[in-house]
Amino acid sequence: RGGGGAIRAGSARQKPGEGPQGGGGGRGTAPFAAAFAVILAVRLLSAGFNPIADCDETFNYWEPLHFLMYGFGLQTWEYAPRYALRSYLYLDLHRFMGLVLRAIGVESAYGKRGIFYGLRACLAILSSTADALLATKVAARFGPYVELGYIIFAATAAGTFNSGASLLPQTFAMNLATLSLAFLHWGHDVLAIAAMGVAAMVGWPFCVLVGAGTGLSIMGRRGIFFSALWGVLCLVAIGGCLLVADSGYYGKAVLAPLNIALYNSRVSEGEKGGTLYGVEPWHFFFKNLFLNFNFVLPLFLLAPLLSFLQNPALRSFKETAGICFPALIWFGLMSSLPHKEERFMYVIYPLVCLGGSLGLCRLCSLVARSLRCCRAASRSVRLKPALWTLGIIITVSLSASRNFAMVRYYRAPLGIYESLSVIHESKLAAGLIKPDEQANVCVGKEWYRFPSHFLLESPSLRLAFIQSGFTGQLPQPFLPGGINSTSATREGFNDMNREEKSRYVKQSQCSYVVDLELPDQRETKLSHMKDWRVVTRIPFLNAARSKMITRAFFVPLLSNLDDDKTGWNSWANYVLLERNTTQKQDESS
Image (cartoon, rainbow, N blue to C red; front, side):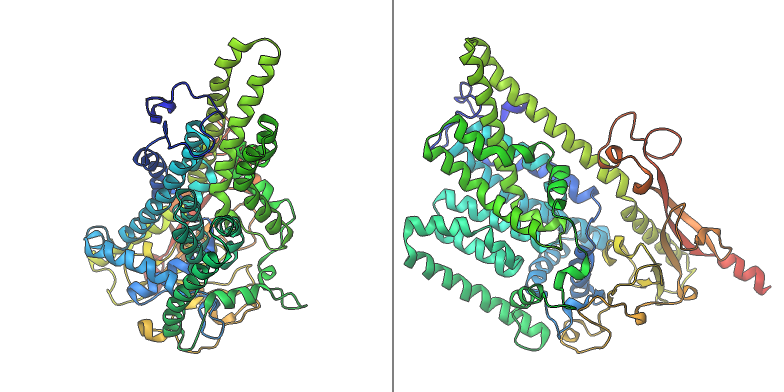
């Protein structure tokens, strides 16, 4: 059926922006199952095909999780007991999901790769559940068109496509903050407080600012004593769980959320906290949000004004402002900070989708009202749903273009490491290499695109670093010994992002090398050296030599997909190289 098919019978006469405004009982709303199915269908595509866009996701979460499940992985300085910035409780929650997947036979059927994609699918299910719950509550207050718009935006927007299946605390916080807002509209105030508490304590402590509106709303309805009592109880319960879990791993009393908050508050000269990892201009988040939400962003930004112009009544404005203002305050606050990363906006993505849907409906109503003033009432009745449909088509088309571009242009690392596992396993099966012989998979400048050891099936395959142009601090392998080694004090970590030379291996110690070969790179192209041969190459967008519009979106006829002869895109090769053993044998003979 068409887009309106998700709306139940009885809502056909409702017009954009004219749904029930005060809670109404939810007539004409999309059922939870329909909302969940629509959002989940797209999130599963992201789980299966979307590349990991943030190296923090790999090295701060996938790698420690791999260590907890398989006994080896890479450790960043944040997990060193001296600093203890990351919570193991967050990892344990996902480890439990991984163990469930193993218990039902996913690993025996598909290997570690199955656990990796299975976990991403579980994350997609969790985020889809949160969004679908919020969608069913949105309809009861704002009407079916707002709800349907929210479902469509939450399902298709590039921002939620990237965040929905990510193993990041910001995604975890986004999901719990969304549930908190849904519980608030549902009337379950204790659950709303608890969800926000888990989001801030286990996920990302800074997201508590987004939940301030929820807290004030509960305080206004239930009083200060009720809010303070349940807030303190949740704080004690969640904090106790964190203290027990993290103290066990780090071997000392630790509250990781407190440590990371203190670290990011360092502003004295020479101690810049997050600024060590880059500084971006004030408009970074505006540009990033527009790429991820296209015209949903201006609709969200204008939603309070459009709501006031459509209906100056204070209640209508307050309802829209209650959705948009927490996100606007967060946007302004994060934009004022020097260090900016895309994931810092994850927590407000559901609010952007909801505010954008409200803005679209309000805009349609205002245009129709203008036509009525021009004595074109009959035309305005037909125009409102037509404008709403046109807005949906434009935003969904741009979102689909962006999503396809990001997957097609940048998925090569996933394909390369999956191919490497297949090649290595075939050698093991043929007896060409010993099962217990470690094979180093080396990376230089492409270290940050490594997707994790989950895609390296054999335990003999280990990531190693060769020196390149990068001069920051790289991770190092966890000490052997499983969970008992996480509390061990070791050298070679610092909290100033200073390069540690001990991380590097010699090129002669590498069995394989993964690299992106660019035409103007400073590093030597190993494919031109006799000691190495290319096993696999996959096209990868050369963003620096591509036109801005076609590297950001897929544009038919202009976005060439694999060559430089036609279109506006330029391509390079993502290559897997293997040491040329034949060359060595010839030389020795």
